Image 1 (cartoon, rainbow, N blue to C red):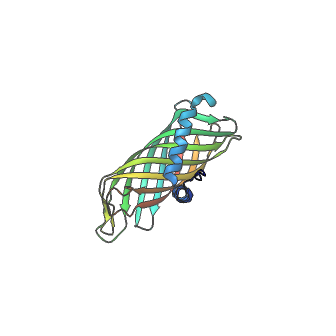
Image 2: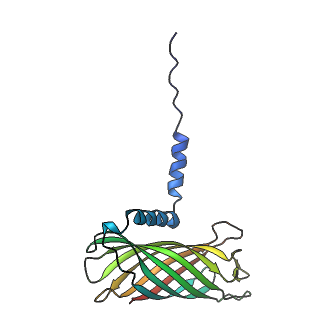
Length: 208
């Protein structure tokens, strides 16, 4: 009696699903993975920075929904870092912010407040006195109203914030920073409608 041939499960469907899942990863998944890697390696791989505070002021605009905002944020070092303090350095910052939105819509406009907290992962090239960097962030937001106009209803006060940005720090101790951020705010499908809000923001920051 001949042995039955070994039957191997067809993994093509599984591979297809994995490829689709990878393509679907956005700013949120990438930032979360980076945060976890920084926390896992911890400050032992690079000299941890002292918790020096910084204040940040920014101006953002969402042209799709006729919204402008002024944002004030406070940021400080977490003490977690990985890499070379005089070369490529990946570190983790904590950030809290408050912003005032201003709707320029003519359809029952409203001007809500935004309150938020986020970890910010930053990759910087620290070779020179001017320090270019990239940053990613995923955080939570609480908006004081659930619409900015009758044309822009986002259903829930609780929202998620995904940020990708770049900038440069300069000065004798890199205490000055100018930068740009793209911020997407949505409720991640918790409730419909969920059109999202996308701000392009420029900012200046001073580290004490």
